[in-house]
Image 1 (cartoon, rainbow, N blue to C red):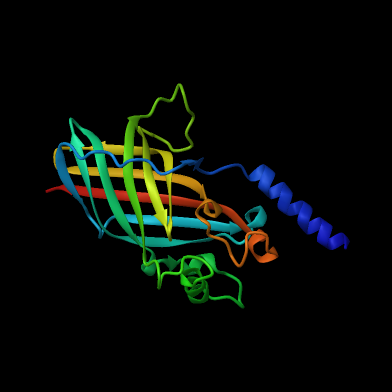
Image 2 (cartoon, rainbow, N blue to C red):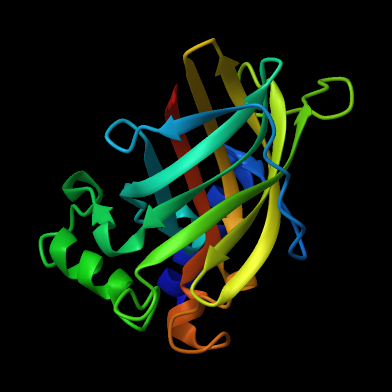
Length: 223
């Protein structure tokens, strides 16, 4: 009993003292997609990736990996992104072997579990979608971001499985005549999209943190 209390106390201490490592994305109802104006840029699917990181309760046993992007495009006018979208290949989700260090566990098993109906059900929902609804300048006097060099606030509809919600997060965006690059790292609550292991109140689901850190590194070339 004492050992159980000690472990639980340690988990709470780590959660309280660890501090946030990324901005919590603002989550709202689905919004209207932004109108495409200006020049079109095609997303480079070879160099564009979506990173993910999740943990158990209290920050224990972090798991992380990469998801590729199938396709997408951006519109740029006067050096600013006006609209865009990209499709995320959930069926190609990978788990980094470095994140699974327990001798009795394998990255391949976790990868298969995440793709199963317990989580993303990729046989039924092989892709996710992000559609830009608004891009605004980032004002550091109004908001403090954990992302170094944030230049913009990006809002967009994120579709996971059969649920779509609008999220807003800071991003570092660079636009040239021929290329757009963007970097962001933020946290979403998976349960907002109805992604739970077994049931929302089950002990198995409770043991997994609802927070999932999402990062993307995006490059697009002018068409």
